[in-house]
Image: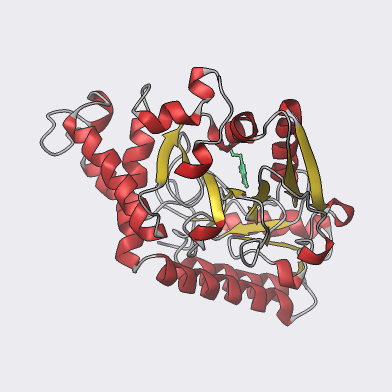
Length: 364
Ligand SMILES: Cc1ncc(COP(=O)(O)O)c(C=O)c1O
């Protein structure tokens, strides 16, 4: 890694998603691109029912099971359609005609999930932080929960606003979680969940696959009949159609990489160190201003602003020239967003902190 961005250099990539992947995983995939060992062809040229692909998929499921501590009563699915399809598919399966579901609206993705659920049935806002541009996670004592709700939906990490639930909501309703942007960044208290879904393209792999995990007892409560492709039961039964094979293949490699780091507790310790370094730098002087409330800050997406928009733009441009890619905040929010997913090395965060020091000396 050099500090200058020439044509061939792989830079420190702070993209919010698709985001940076472990270099070792990409190299391994590169080596196997022409021939997957023993298959006589690459993994994307053979049947999704071949022994080779079946082994890859089962290995990915087994590794997810052991990393997260999922019992045999959990179904693990690899679906297409993105996390966005789950916004509709989850209520379609689990929001009954004679019931309701609660939603914690902590960002744009959560709002989109609620919108889709309302197409299906009675989906209610239990809490929202839209009053302050989603800069915080509402305190549990302010939530207006519905007794007997079919589920409570929440977004564990809000990619755009840089906020994150510190821990799982403690409610009676089954938890359905959009974990797209912090999946496998820390351990989860699995017993609290009925369903977890995550688009892979931030922490777990490339775009194209969404990991969907559902507890069997919850799955059995789904509505019937459902369109075949939108029925979780169909996908839990057997491989119904062609899965996103290349994406699953890469996910399996990323899961091995996480195991090599030491699992989710080790991953969490590294992620807290990385986020801690950045927030400490932001808070050290008045030049940078964190946009999320301190108690709601995300360990995955660190959002901040400089004294004015001109400086924001200059920061992004000069950071890129210094080898730090994709630091521009989400289009409707502005400012800076540094996404520091699992695969962002600590050296990348150190390089960003040094750049922030240097930029402040020049522009502050
Ligand atoms: C928290 C969260 N949920 C859902 C989505 C949408 O995911 P997809 O593009 O896979 O539909 C995103 C995308 O960035 C996200 O960050």
